Amino acid sequence: MINVNTKEITETIKMIRDQHLDIRTITMGISLLDCADEDPEKACKKIYDKITKTAEKLVPAGEAIGRRYGIPIINKRVSVTPISLVAAASRTDDYIPFAKTLDRAAKTLGIDFIGGYSALVYKGYTESDRKLIASIPEALSGTDFVCSSVGVATTKAGINMDAVKEMGEIIKKMSEMSKDSDSLGCAKFVVFANPVEDNPFMAGAFHGVGEGSSVINVGVSGPGVVKRALENVRGEDFGAVAETIKNTAFKITRMGQLVAREASKMLDVPYGIVDLSLAPTPAVGDSVAHILEEMGLERCGCHGTTAALALLNDAVKKGGVMASSYVGGLSGAFIPVSEDAGMIHAAASGALTLDKLEAMTCVCSVGLDMIAIPGDTPASTISAIIADEMAIGVINQKTTAVRIIPAAGKKVGDKLEFGGLLGEAPVMPVHHHSAENFINRGGRIPAPIHSLRN
Image (cartoon, rainbow, N blue to C red; front, top):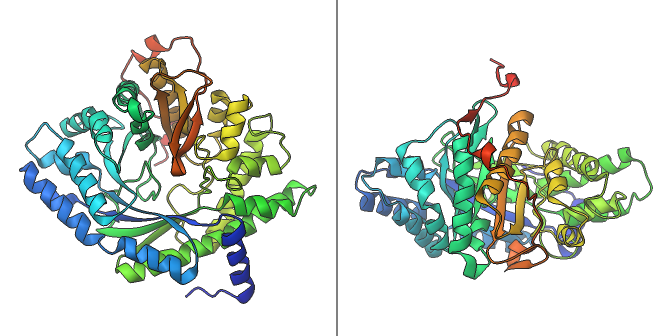
């Protein structure tokens, strides 16, 4: 039972009305392991039937909770078992019908995204992994709501550099196949190190094999709330800054837990976790970059940005874990360039560079997210960017990811326009020196020595 006093209710109403507080997503995870069938048509029918039956009340429940508590619930989503595991039993080389089945289920349910067209290849490929990965460009270009991810590295396994090389090639191909929509296909695809099994956020959500049959995971938001709280401690020391962020994160997470428990009860599905990541939007007043600038930085990306982000991420986690016993997912602060008004401004002005973003990923949730680069960037350079980010995750024993968009036909200074939560992205420069010989070595970068902890 969650006890909320009158003052907390008043504060929450103000957060919703004036400071862009929302529940970013209610995500239902669904296991599809029991849908495997050697006949691919039967497997697809089982998948469609299970998803649409299990999640048939997800959207109505989300809308009912939003009306009851007056809090915007922006997205209702579904994540499923990595399809490479489910489709492995089917006698087929064509995995596109699986992607179209997921898309059809999403349309039937009226959800915003469905994640799990995924493969996990940390140490090597199965034949099913190869088929699925090869199909990703066509699958994402030919569907509206399907999201995909590939795990290529873990701290325990090291980095599968053969997969890293292929990811660069896949992303380039996907960019060309969706060039008429500003390479939107790339915005639905993530490459991971140390992916988590209970992530409610897209495009990287999938329902891990360690999860139950179905589960409700909730992702909260609230950068605007944190920014407004910090305005009240201008000029005070970093101890006051950290304490203010912790207290604010506590309140945000309590609301997330309330929504998660209500959704669990209404849907008769177990409550999993609250992911307390600060997820920004392109809306003014809802920016992680502006939080960092409120700490005293003239512009996000200048010297001091990494330290400010480290403080923010740590304080958010500390506040969140006091509000819920089941915090999971990614939990921290996201820095997607196209989805954050302050990041967009900083990148467009040249204050925020790709190198600085990489440094910031050492201390925040996830990694290089929604970054547009020139369309003529070689696949090997994209693979090298992925390799760098995977190394940060592996060495630091944290989840890192790359969602990067080589903007077909565009150059530095141009802009991609996605609209909605995906926002807009200024095309950022990359290094022109080649990493092709490095990427072509292939094989596996071994796990770091500190992975041997048993």
